[in-house]
Amino acid sequence: MTFGTCEARDRGPLDVVRHRHAPGRALPDARSAARLWSMLAAMPERDVERNCSTQTFVETLRRLADALERGEAFRIQVAGARFSVPRDAALSIEHEAADDEEELELQLRWRR
Image (cartoon, rainbow, N blue to C red):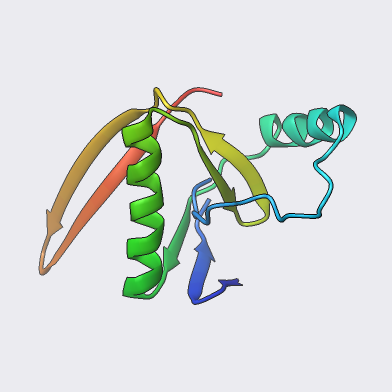
């Protein structure tokens, strides 16, 4: 899948693209929102990894950092599913090293 300049590989629930409401576009009514929420609640386990440009990564990280500093939830779209990361999500930084490869993950975790 491709999102703008980002490429996503479906590995299972978190490939991240921030969602902003488009001006002039109607917001979903309560019934549609409830239907979407029930679909998300029933969503099977996922793990999605995205490769993206440095610019896209920085822009997304900056929007996330701004939301965290303001104490606000962060709206995001992941492989077609829109949701919010709550303002009180648990934050962690993880470093993994194995053989000749290293990985740094900035994680946000919360309960549905």
